[in-house]
Length: 231
Image (cartoon, rainbow, N blue to C red; front, side, top):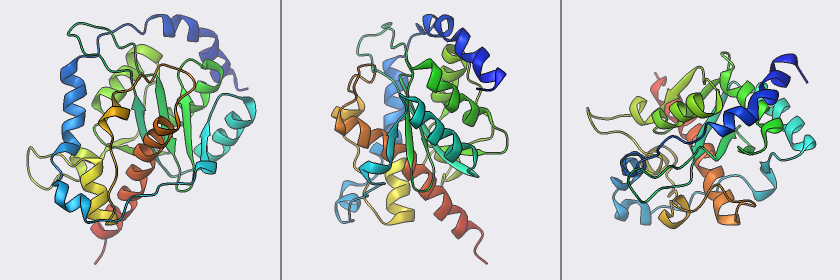
């Protein structure tokens, strides 16, 4: 294990102990609003977004998964990126998130539970790598929480919510991007999004939801870029 990663792992108990900042209802609703603007009639008429197969979703909680993740993530040119946090429903209540970090390549998704610091070092290396572009929707809060609570400083980030914006003040959400650029309906269950992401093990629905969020960001980015660069 490289010295930089060993040093990060050694400091993780102190870092996790500082994960007590407030995650407000306002922040949670602002992230959700990116998807709520998509017309339901449009989504209903499209085929469902399938994402990667369950066999290609890896929860990084052991050495083998960490090695697989490191090889795949650090070799990528672009990664889909998102995080999940336990929601709060009372003003002033602490979320303590993020509780899960999701990173996707074109054909695999890696989920990093935050309470596994040894394997979280792989996510840190990928997120801080300057040569890898990380793309996702509504990443402002995700980046802030990673910096302040986990000492992870994401580099080379593109927030697709703003980059794909079609008019001023109207951000693009994952649902809208999937419909527009992939012709597919991304299912976003509010029950799953507001579930407790700090519990282990994650449910099958949580795993699929988290994987889709990161993977759809990468696929819509590639399609958007291809159309943007089309003569």
